[in-house]
Image (cartoon, rainbow over all chains, first blue to last red; front, side, top):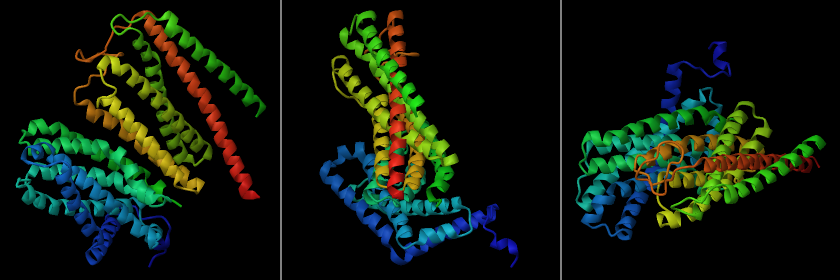
Length: 237
Length: 230
């Protein structure tokens, strides 16, 4: 072992970054595979939200056509908040976060690892919720456009959500804080995602939906870049 | 300290005088608008307070960036002071806008881009204050506050852009107005002078209040330190 490997400077080459990032993702996914805590909670919660919407909004065939994308997105972001706060809370409670931060890797690798793991949880929830919704309401939600929108929307939401969750988890009022911090900031992503989804579900042409997709991409880039830049300040001690 | 207190007093008196003069201009100098009548007078202070609200959130975001770069507690105080003032001024803008909207748009509220964006901004900064109140350790509170001020400041224009794609009915006084906007009017020179004077007056009021709030914040910090040392 050379002396350099004891240095406190994190390795900055891109392979080391990728390795650290995949290690964090892998850790989260393996822990989730064994406990199935987060995804099962997100899933049951998402289904409950859909049920509540059914009775609260009287979702008959006509009403559904207009509100399906809204119902879906509210379900996703509520379930997403659950997953985000849980995934940071387990790190904090068992002292894992300190262990992660002590590791001689680039801090942003930890951010991207957590963010991508959260994204996987959100997408996994969506993959189960969509067919269930299709069966319950006898509509077809299998739509390549909608899948793209969900991918982009969930990415933007997870990008800013992971950052804010890692702040909220360190506050005294953490359980109530995350949605309050996250919802107003993530609003542009939600707006564009709902508009694009209702475009695709309503059978609009690509050219009509394209502006919303472009906006989503831009928001994803902006939020990911901003969160990446300030994450170091959130975890520094 | 003595010198800065004297300066603050001058600033206070100046701000009060400017505000009184602006009020005088609004009611005595500016002509009554032909179609809307007296209620149009709300416009002068409505836009001025909205501008100060916007300015204070810019100040807060810039202070946040400077804080993160240097970790000087003073900038945290500036950021916090500016957010608090921004919330007050923006609330005045929202309420005065509602008073104008009731007779002109025939509703207190509409989900127009500007109205929605301003409200979301207000909510973001309310969340900012809640985040701060949930953290006891001053250094961490300052860091998190700065991060959230920056993220919030990035998000607000994006929200505005998103909603702007829908058609707006809010009149655009400066720049090109959409012909479908309700309540737009031609600004006469006297109106413009009054308007600009109002902007100046409110900006000075903001500066004076900010000064006092920063001073208060620093004193509170000092008290905190003394209590810890005892």
